[in-house]
Length: 309
Ligand code: APR
Image (cartoon, rainbow, N blue to C red):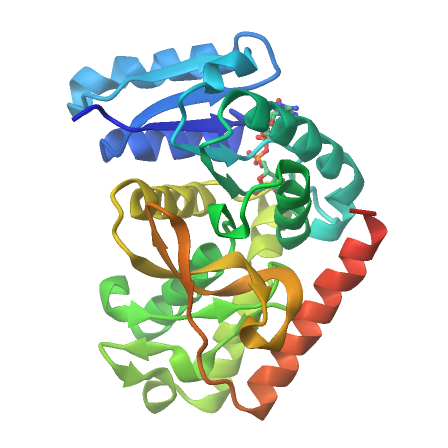
């Protein structure tokens, strides 16, 4: 069977590391694309030269020609500016919207059959813009954010308890911004509710740290934003799609009717497979969780209103 093809537009920190994870796990062939001449080719070649050492047999190529998107099964958009200290994700909106628009136009031209994953921030609004511009059915487009926010929460719980990350499950829904909604009731350690294992104050602290986790890294790096965990989550979602794994992962998905919403991209648990967002799973939210979720949706809509799409 021919290997699948995943293209990544934006060969910066997130894009190039996503290419490396995909190659290491032999998930697909990879095409890295960047507007900076030579950059994607150089990084792809560098990854291929690691192949004999790590023993992966997929092809990773780079290009600055959008024509090389042809025949992609999945296109991942990581093109755009990252945050600098003092910036919120929302501050990126104008510049990144223009970049996402130009990239999506190329995707539609060269591989209209591909599924689309958006990573560029501010995430929820960028996915919505990409969907509008692409004209794709909404289940074929998804945003990567909840996977990352949940991974961060899992890491913090494991650090706090001194247990294996493998045993920690967590769910963060809502927008990928300050109003994200980490769900303590759905955070467990081998099935044990986290609230049985940590004091209420400690649970509050890990939830709050999760909400600010992106900013914590931005303020440490000073020159850009996180990329190891984001790219690992990109690869996790790409694997779910390419290998049709039917994983249940929180992703930015189009909710119309679901969760009582009227047509907005927001982070909710979805079943991810070869058809993209195959199902949106509606979980029970108590009054407080629902209030926080609605608040997060309102923040996305407010930001979206700045972009007239
Ligand atoms: N087409 C292709 N590539 C582009 C375009 C474009 N129109 N515009 C910008 N790029 C490329 C840049 O040349 C750069 O290599 O996108 C890349 C972005 O890489 P970085 O600056 O390293 O940013 P990164 O940390 O990877 O973050 C990218 O993902 O997590 C989000 O908030 C983050 O929006 C940001 C995006």
